[in-house]
Image (cartoon, rainbow, N blue to C red; front, side, top):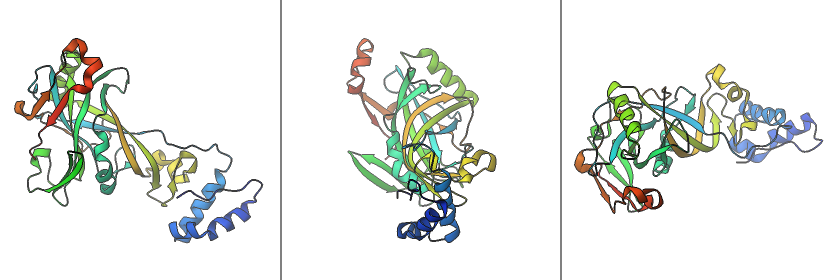
Length: 292
């Protein structure tokens, strides 16, 4: 919902009265104190330049060694990891279970790079599922249709007792082309020091303290403007996952890397010779078997 904005030359008192009495605002913010906070925030930000989007949120996840494999085709390294959980991470970004349930599939096909360097791509995310740990359900796409399965065994997706719902991913590292990087990932995996960072774009966010809905940073309430000092959570809405980078430190402390796929878990079809890999990479089809 677009927020009410001050008109040119409108007085503060007139705007606040108009904002507080607006039918849409009353419906969106029925609590008078909350609506008042939104209206005053809009007045305070009236001279700021409007932004149509946010900078991407960043999640950093820790990978814990449980094994790895080279895949059926020996020039690839297969990795598994939990992308993010339905909770508040160390960057004060909050992913609700409902939001992850809607957006998990947007991670598929996105790049895996070194340190978020977009010119240093070493692989890609080949599959993603949403693990609902409260309902014991797995959400995934097959033949372009979403499938939902009930499961009494979430262990194959790395579930730990009491864990929040999460997005689970599998990725392919191009080991032959990036041998040193693959060895670094394998070594960090084994020592428990492997971390990935996932950028996430989002259309809106809501303050967990006062409930103000913002569609740009210029619409932040005081809590969100000072969220790192106050510890205020930013609830992300309408998310799209972007690229993953290998980085240093975790934000989502509960997110861990998992055992890589067994050797017979991947069938790489129509493999293109290495010298033609860049031009015809998209012809490499990956059949991910996640035990479904």
